[in-house]
Length: 127
Image 1 (cartoon, rainbow, N blue to C red):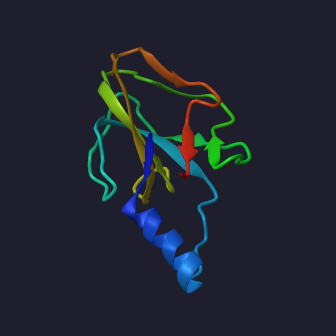
Image 2: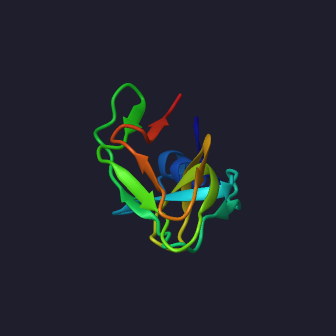
């Protein structure tokens, strides 16, 4: 289950309840973590081995849920990524703000391996 970051929670609460402007990011990026972040951020994002966050897009929301609408893949080149235990969605290719994060079934990504997420695999839900 995905969790909104403190950053996004505060932006949305201020936007809805205080009429404070919030401009959503034009592009979202999927990130991989070898140590999961928390709502406040942190964690250990994969680095090296040709790693880069990947652009992510979503289909229209329905019934309080929204899902990715295109496949996204990461291929380790030149080095291992290690064991990936979580994903995060950021508002920038590098740096930026963590928007949401989710634990995942651990996956070991060695040099030349590809970790792929099919369309519909990345899901965000409001309960």
